[in-house]
Image (cartoon, rainbow, N blue to C red; front, side, top):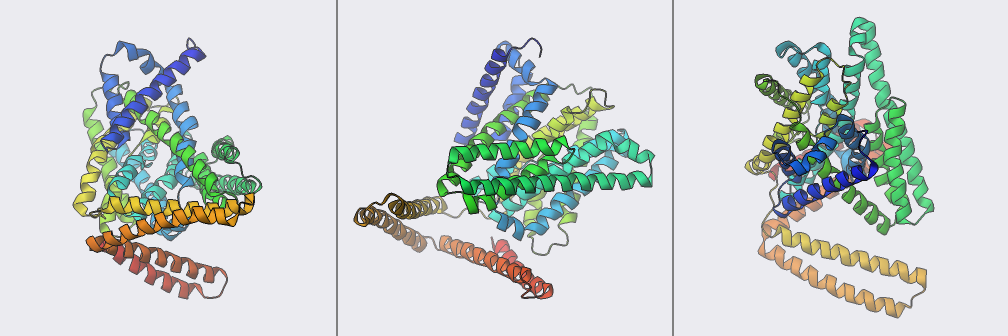
Length: 525
């Protein structure tokens, strides 16, 4: 990189953004998952001879550039954006399957892949468990984009996203322990096992502590400002600051960002952000995440073509098989004792557990003198490529085959009308607020409110007609309303328990009844 000046780096970066944006725009136009399109096109660019693109490929696929861009520059942004919008109430309601998958499932997958590749593929003990850690991280970007396009149940999407956010943190911790401490722990025997367990707990706990403290602090800070550009800057500092601070003291930066962003997006939004601020912060991170994902997945495609396979196709296919088996065992075992979870969802979570850019970035971060590094790079890249292309392209077919909450006829029109209703209600609410703040006459504000009320009334009539013409749509909305009411019941019981009004035994029984009703609703879809 020494010969590259800053101007050249900027030109290369801009060129990369242009290519990524173009591919993403085309994929979205044809309603296809853009990460898969980017990986495929990136691989094609890398395999084919385009002399004009050689400087770009050489620049991007340098290990230090790839690792810096993905891990330091984009990972906090991607994690922060996803966590910022994750509703805490729904996360709390679904905490059992999420935690079972993110902790139990991740650990199980790590152990199965580690032992299997050690005994079956002949990797060294360290390389085997590093590979196990790399294959434990999941990337929900492609799957969630498919979920949105076909209207999959929101609870399923919450579980998939929640698992991914927390298991990324677990996978990074397991990777660091395996790559840099495993041999020394093994030499110490039982004492090493204890030290490894302590380090594991310490890294996660410190990540939770840093993320929680910074998330709470920045949330309180928003109470003193009503200035969305400044509050966007606060969110940038929070996401990158929590990640870098945690990493600097050898804690989990991933967990720190996830926790900080969740607190900021839920508690901070509730106590200190106006609707305008929430909208603009959300829009900013939408753009940042789209840009980051577009560039990252294109870089993954380019990087895959730079790795020699050393005639190891047999090992590559065996590794893919091991990873698929490990994922299946991890998902079905970790969810086996959760009664209120539809079986069709388990199949989707299993096949939709795609590997992504984090696995590749971690593999590239291994020191050049790490024994088995080249083989790990080959296996990781091809497993990720298989995951994104084969699993990513087929998960939509699986969802439709299982009949998981497909959109009913006229659903798009209904969504459009509901959007208009919310727009008009938000506008009316804002008019009342501004009238008091700016001392606008009541007659003038009422005139504008009347216009919005008329528009709202017209849309409500259109919705009623849709209900009459499409009874299944009305039934779906009734179930949605019931589901939200049940969530409220669940939270009310939790509050009574917190205030010592009822015992935990009574709360558990009532919670179980509510979850039974919820799962029946989900299975009906």
